[in-house]
Image (cartoon, helix red, strand yellow):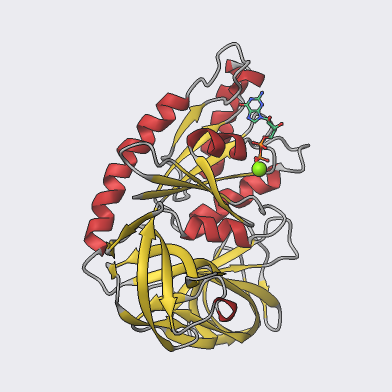
Length: 356
Ligand SMILES: Nc1nc2c(ncn2[C@@H]2O[C@H](COP(=O)(O)OP(=O)(O)O)[C@@H](O)[C@H]2O)c(=O)[nH]1
Ligand SMILES: [Mg+2]
């Protein structure tokens, strides 16, 4: 199963595109659109709470294997205040090292071919050296009364299908690892008890599995699993699941909790970080926002090291080790990628890092 996030600035046409590709399902600060009818099941995630907050964007990307970055005709114009968020989405994809994706030049009916070429050139310059520099740009619209209605949408679907094949092969490789399920929603259903929604990030999760939930570090049992409203006995990597859990209550579960046999749990971190070129310097005692998996929380920069020397600041584009401390317990594994953001800046993403 392939999960896609459809990201971009406000009014980039991402909700219109998502609604065109799937049927609306679960909705909070992210909205799921499912295409249950087609043989290859996909979920399209619209981080609708973005750009107001970063959390929906990071959540959507971390439950997806593929992204569609929507850039409207004015999406990179200097005098368009929203264009900072086009840049921010590019920085997010780059810091996440996001592999699979397409750039959708949306609202093609409200622009012209010369403007589209100019936009493509701007994008080429902006994305050069980032993880998305080779992503294909495809011009499209979702306007049924356009002269060329739904131009590009079928082409987009064809590219998605080709990428989905690659993604499925990668997911099959991950099935050999211990199961980890990232939870994005949790609620109580009368007569059924605690139900969580989420994604199998690696391994194969099975009905009746006796496992744990983190950072609670509590033993639980998976009573049953559903995917796209159908009961299944086991859920391989990439499956979007609904699970009934035994021995935990929905009120004790927050977004980002992980179902797995083993995770690290902490509220301080030593990370080997790469600071983005598109941020300001990071200083001792500043407060950053930390994201890992689907969890997020403010952290204080306690210490900074460059080449093992303790320093007071780290410059954009540099590599350093950061000692960070927060208040809340967070669950993660050694190979998980952390993102750091500075919420006071217009482009908020600041760095990525891994456990030192
Ligand atoms: N002309 C035209 N308008 C569009 C297209 N896609 C979206 N819109 C309009 O642009 C506005 C923002 O679209 P929406 O999908 O809500 O953008 P979002 O804020 O990125 O989710 C709405 O008024 C849409 O009707 C398109 O392909 N062509
Ligand atoms: Mg929207």
